[in-house]
Length: 199
Image (cartoon, rainbow, N blue to C red; front, side, top):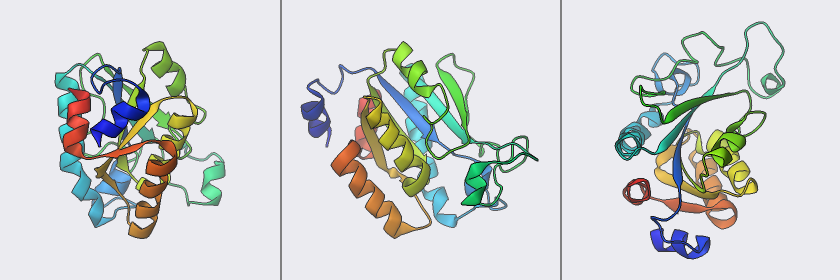
């Protein structure tokens, strides 16, 4: 798969400035007491942690996104999903082992929509850092990962989604989303391949 990334970008795999985007690794989805917990979510934890660990070791930019909504206030997303991930609450907190570390190369993007780019300064931040390629992992594949991948492509970034570091409780939608991402927005890579991109 890496050859495809290099061929379509016109650059070698090591010549593009790359950032890791870790999407919504929060208690809501990953903790057994979470409001949107699904057991399969835990399957992506080891690979996501491996990506974070390598990105830290290599001094890569890491963006941790968090779905976070305001208590007591109207939110258009609630028309499709009941109130969730309320700021300051248990569900909005990062799952153990996730979230920005002490390093100077990590930031948080709080979001109120599926895409980490919508109504945030993520695109501006990445452009200011001269980032060209994004490696995406996290949950859910068919919701926030797909929406973020699509908007990343629209903003002109090379998109690599780590297929074995994302999933969903709706497997058929996850599979369709990965097919769409690979066909229209970017590349699917394995964790092994993504670790090479981050090295």
